[in-house]
Image 1: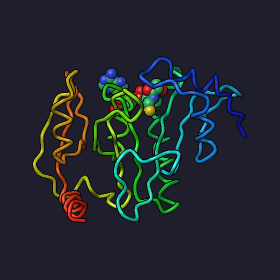
Image 2: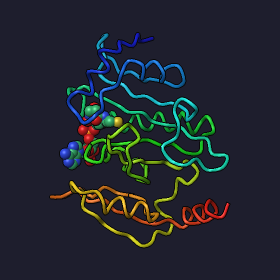
Image 3: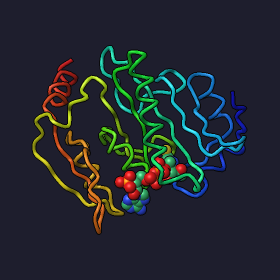
Length: 211
Ligand SMILES: CC(C)(COP(=O)(O)OP(=O)(O)OC[C@H]1O[C@@H](n2cnc3c(N)ncnc32)[C@H](O)[C@@H]1OP(=O)(O)O)[C@@H](O)C(=O)NCCC(=O)NCCS
């Protein structure tokens, strides 16, 4: 059992693009969901949180009929333990927990230029589905992982658009509004996002519009 020292875990985000969280954030999360804490010999080296979507923590995207949605609310690691795959491990643990409890979808947000976090989420089958400001002025990609369509990367995708991730995100916003999903982060001299459309999402969008 680890006693959460709120001041310590808040300080872990300070070197990245992570938005510093207020103490009430952690209190609310722990009341409704879980905070996973990495610690070594009594020293906290990181944390990660997850919470079911609900009144206090609304979903970032429209919730489909009968879908139960889990939310990932951030991870921060001490710089000393980064580059060891810990965020990927923490994403996987939380996805499996939601899946084992019968959830159909997991949503999260990520700052567009927070490359380690964006890469870790998209490499773990999260798709970029929106770009907006869920936290009062902080622009975020909204990402979602459809637990019912785990094979979606191999499903028919068309058309595909590769778009450089630059300071101006308006073209990304347009593609997302047009129903595209960001499915890959291509790393090179510049970072590019690959967008595609999916047949099953188009069907769902039509049903939603007709409902
Ligand atoms: C986000 C965070 C948890 C990721 O830590 P991590 O699990 O150690 O992730 P890594 O540093 O290994 O980076 C993940 C991937 O991004 C790549 N990457 C990191 N910085 C990059 C950059 N500037 N350009 C291109 N790729 C980059 C890494 O090479 C790695 O890819 P690889 O596995 O193919 O080598 C950590 O950076 C952190 O605590 N940041 C501050 C808090 C924060 O921003 N949290 C996220 C908000 S929810």
